[in-house]
Length: 452
Image (cartoon, rainbow, N blue to C red; front, side, top):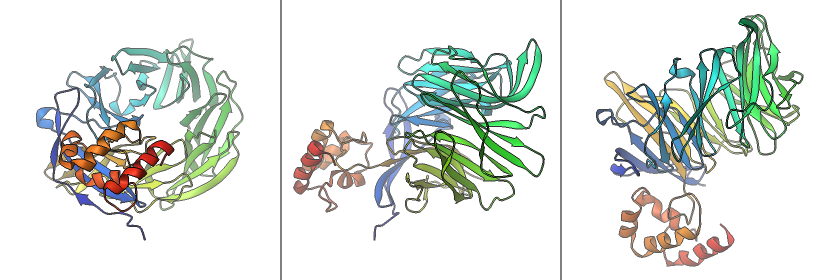
């Protein structure tokens, strides 16, 4: 029977950041989730040295960005790789807008860092080119009064934005409703502002959006009084008009579109009011809006992040940050696991969570007690046999590290200090006997030539 979860703690060490003069206190261990090994790396913020690690997280392409409010009332983005090495200098993405920091949303996508937020009667977006820090800001949806809830989705150099609020027409407030628009990455509208749904009682709220080549989908929840809520989604071409309402869930249900999958199906989340024990439900809908699977009850779960293949992670409640991993079949993989390698404070709180396509799970969290709080960032990284350079893939670049680990382990540890020594036998074991030896040479070559 596989050992589903085990932990070996390494001695704390210092991790030097790349491309900037910063070092973090770091701890690492190895855990097993559903029989697969993962390296869990944790770094701690050093407030005395003004070394921030950020809070909210966005991850893609094997890197993670965190957001932090800088000393000059500006927003700083930090870039980390899957071993939590800072791989670029801090990125200044502009001033904090005159709005609540909680209303700022952000995303890393296709080599750009994006932020969007309500500002001066409209929605503003910033696109920051990561390689040179150039900042492009442009308005979205024109004159508007929003409720602060804004959703954005990116696809093929287009961005879709959806929100709820009042439009401003000839200086007067238009009807309250759900609105959406599709733009190029340079902020050029690809069609008019779409008025998806109106409610003169101000009781409808946008809850999500998804975009693919031919279809824009926007979801919203309507409050029909204290005893009932209804959730629906609408499909439309990016230029409109809005399509008919397609109900999601039953009566007294809130929810929304989580994402569109590679096969164009939609993952939708719902909650039933006054049924906290039932918690979160997931369903899968076809691209045309027909229910294909679910609803599947997950119980009392909280933050949720999904990949395009349908797999996802979610967090449990309680005084510790605990995470569950689900496969594309929505079956949980092993027991829950924590974000902490070590902390001396009793209470943990989640600050940010994301899940990148290489399988790395990123967690921003804090630990507190009656005497103070410490801030942490954790990366839980899958270990791929043969990947001795630690980039998550088996390639020709792993040949020299494989030979070095096989012939001189001490030299390998010195050359790759970010990889925990306990992971060397896991990464180098291609024949399944649990250790890196000469007997792994032929299986390594075979995996390199023919695939694992």
